Image (cartoon, rainbow, N blue to C red; front, side):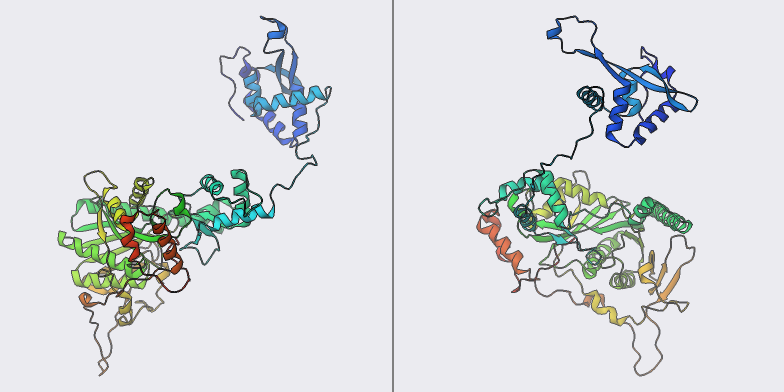
Length: 559
């Protein structure tokens, strides 16, 4: 129900009808639940009569009728005992309807000589089968031409595939009209809605989102109509964890502003970017080279760092993330930093894994620094570093970028103030094979109290320079004390005794040669060059790409 008419109303409707009566009328009208009976109600209380006075000739008058509006008023329990004259505004707002609803009711009443015609919507027999098999096939073939990919994060839970986030149903329908071949298909989708309905019914498809913007746990709780006490307690605990994490992050940020020896930063891998990139229709139908941008945002100085590379250089796993963070520590420790405090999401393959934790141990040992890594609560991982991704996407939305170098330039100029992003063009010389050193750690499973180490549940890990191979951890932000695990246990003095000896400067590189891209993607890129969709001056880069001899698709495009 909407608000009543203004107090300036000449009929003084608000004085005649109390708000509780209006609410009862509204509830009664919408509880009818049948369109024909609602028309009966409107025809009864909106009375149309011939216009009494004409200021122009009747034949030239735009209005021949006057409508008087009434609403029922109760006396006791009978709400329909009397009718009160009200203005049009009060009538429509009380019932929360438009005038078209009233007009239709009056027209049907006139045609039925005082009896409202039955609702005939959907009852006609002329239901031609507009959507046929050939039309469906044309739409499915068009969607497949975009080469949808699986999600990098949810492929084990869902078969859903994704298209580029820059696409939408209206844009795809426009491209469909350009793409459609009448010699191949006998029937064509004629509207965006028809095109969208065919896709939704036949294909499990979606559009890439930067990350999950809605917390799944909160969403399920809000939609649960039968919340138990256990559900309520679990949800409250989840929210407490979220708030506690936010408060600690704010405190870390404040400490970094007050003390130059503390550096607080948030890091994340941006969604997969494309080479070439741009709003060119041909690009949508071709597989493109993937480009990765790992960002670190210093919450104290507001300095952003972009570690960027394309898929022929490296992948985007734990070795890559560890190497970039190690390089960041190496480059900033000279500024007097003694305490690093990192924040990130919970992606196990990239951030929360033994390879990253081993890198922290080695970095702490080499640079004599304390390192702590805290993980934001699942579903609530938004942080200050997200602004880097948003700004880059906004600045490059309408640009055409043909090569990785053009992307790197776009990163540098994305921010126009006094602190542009620092771009590190990652080469294979930077990516160390930390994974190969995992075997030198002889304890990943048993904690100080003899229990099993819950790596997949930790909310925080801490490595200290005084004992870098002892990892302190918490599994809840509400825990007061840390637990720990000694990752290098002392061995008995036998002739097989060995000491941990890792020279981090001599850790082998993860890659010795460029990583081949799959044959299908290479063919699409060469086609873009041959047709000059990619200008000649950029062909050298693409001609130097190496491809596999198989048609097996890689997962570099998935997000």
